[in-house]
Length: 272
Image 1 (tube, rainbow, N blue to C red):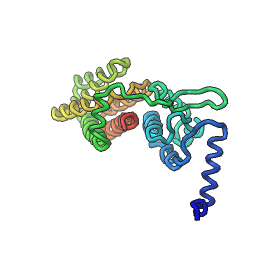
Image 2 (tube, helix red, strand yellow):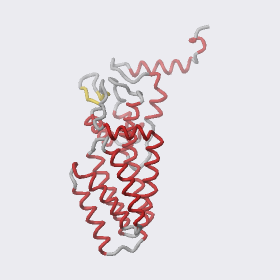
Image 3 (cartoon, helix red, strand yellow):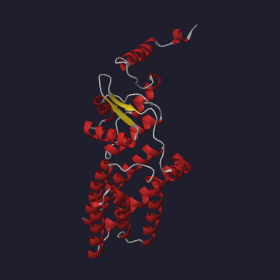
Image 4 (cartoon, one colour):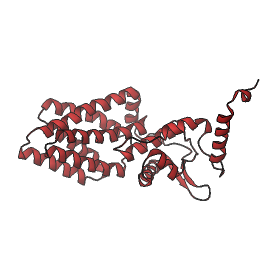
């Protein structure tokens, strides 16, 4: 007896219908054997970092071959609904991947957003090599260590009665980060995070944050600077510093946690 005889007719009919629908316009779409993975990857996002998590999810789909080279991403309306993000956020994420060389736009009847035939190669081998040496578990270790340190630093800083000099120091570093252009952003971003540790009142914490930030910057050097992510980071920096200056430890910790999660999402997407 052949395999067709053992197939569940309802499942077979569903897959056949999906194949007909996906290929109705003649364009190449993701391999229909990957329908389960397609639904798993394009599931609703967590909240808080919609842009960064959308970039991560799209890169995951591309890297895992769920949407392979030369294949078209799902329609914008459908993809936004499945991810539970606005179409504006989805467009910004797709634009970021276009700038990074992962997708291209094609016009015409069979147009849309397609994965490029040849995915970009890493241009910063040292950072990529570090990511490979660390592996998935090592990356998560860096993210966890950073989360523990920096959420704790924000919470501790907010719990202290800051001096006028400390408050001025923090607001000055925030202003520098907010005004930084693309070339200076990561350096000034690092300086702001160190300033938060500095006003937390623990010299040991400053050293630990500096160490983890050094490792993090090596990884960040392997991914592109994205304008939308920088804008989002500035907004999050404002909330973190505002909570610290207001003396609200819980809000400072939560704002920092959300900020770090966005960075982790981008790194997972580009380096995994």
